[in-house]
Image (cartoon, rainbow, N blue to C red; front, side):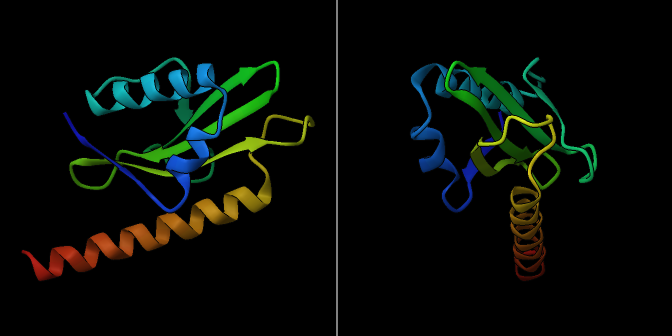
Amino acid sequence: MKNLTWLADSRSNVKAFPAGVQDDIGYALYAAQVGELSVKAKPLHGLGGLVMEIAVYDARGTYRAIYTVSIGESIYVIHAFQKKSKSGIATPKSEMELIRKRLRQLRSEVKNAEKRNP
């Protein structure tokens, strides 16, 4: 089973979601940890096939959690947010910018750690 690592405010964001949404996201992340793919997870367009998006819908809105399985033996939860806009299904531009920034930071940190511990 892979380790689960939460970046920045992603864990507190998920904890602020409704209980049923938290359960669905938690199950999808567990599936990723054991090498499976939840029906609620799909590749996040524009970031390659190893950055995944979990989308959960309930009466209060759409909730998303973004994670990666491409770095080492860990699953990294990069970001989690509630989508405010009802237009379209695409991830908002501001959220994508934050996801890209955190992904760059993560890759840089992992690369530097590998240099220190070959």
